Length: 163
Image (tube, rainbow, N blue to C red):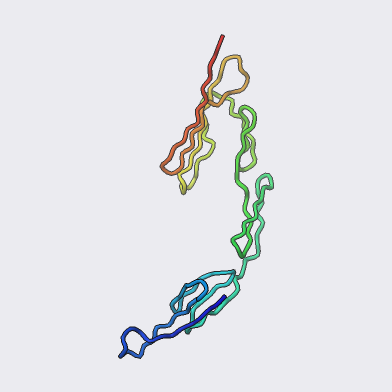
C-alpha cells in the first residue's frame, strides 16, 4: 500500500493556516486530519498528516444456545460471531417445526399465523389458509400469504375434483 501524507497551504496565500490531510496514492483516496475509518482489519486515523494504524480488537465470540442446535458462524472480515439459524420448516400435511424447535400440527379449517413480528421492524407476516376436504385425513393448504413491508405475495393452490 502506498500512503503519502501532505500538509499544504490553504487556498488563501496570506494565511499561515495549513490544511492537513492523508492520501493513499494507490487507492486515490484522501482523508482530512482527525478522520477515522476501518480498513483491512485496522482502525485508521489521519493525525498530523500521517495515518496511524490500530488493529481491530475482536470480542470473544459468545456461542448462543439455539433451538435444535442450529448455529451459524458470521465473519465480518475481521471478527467472527455466532448466531442462531432461525428458520421454521414444513413437512407432510400439515406439520410445522417453528423457530424455537417446537412442532405443531395444523389440522383445522382456518387461517394460521406462522410468523408475525412482535416488535415490527420489517413488517413481516406469514399466514397459511387451510381447508378441509370431507373424507381426506389431515388438512390441505389453500394458500400462503407473505407480507413484507408494503409488499404482499400470495401462493394459491387450485384443486379440481373430477368424477
